[in-house]
Length: 294
Ligand SMILES: [Zn+2]
Ligand SMILES: [Zn+2]
Picture: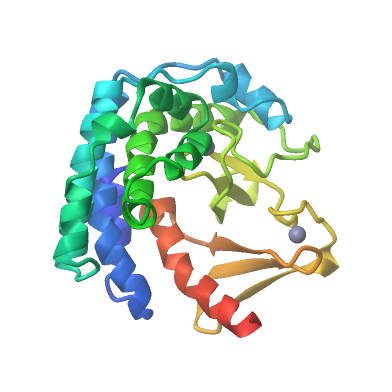
């Protein structure tokens, strides 16, 4: 869940993280995530309620919830959030020396009203990944997309979807009889987006359990501990964890079958855990591993 308290706790916890590049990313994106959490909080009271049965069906491999029952996003509110988040990102990137004055001015001049058409906003409530892919083709100038439009538009939509996605995730978790084997989806059961992070957390009645997280909508869902998120491989001999000697909490689940290395967080207490912060922290290990395997 996008929660200001959880974000502040997690960011504070990583203020002295060993990897300088990771600290720079946390400094640059932290204030924008916090702004998104504030927007989310204001929206949460009016969140739509979805039938939990849709989540159960999506977990069985049927269509993601939002394809069956999209979230109606208010276009004016989305444009307003994008402007607010855009200002926060520009300010933070400038303060951290990530952009030139010229790049910042270009970003500040972007016309969100023209970019977020009624059609685009409708797509965002049904398929946020498709919404972001569509935007990539229409942003002018194109070099604004990666550093500015993508993070701002995805967080603006996330703030809108997060309350619904978190409710659905919570509704699913406690009711499942885990003795029945079910193959879990590796893409988001709420919005169909890709899983971006796994976490192995201790639970009160099932020991350690693995969950996957989606950053498009904020959903999380249970997943098999010994199964590749990318290709579904379940042979234990093909799967192992890579991590820094000095840091056992952050690992990559490496699959010999498809060569995927999936970011996985271990043993983090619920209080200090923020998937959105962990996704950034993981980039350090992912880069080190990619360089070492290249
Ligand atoms: Zn999702
Ligand atoms: Zn694999």
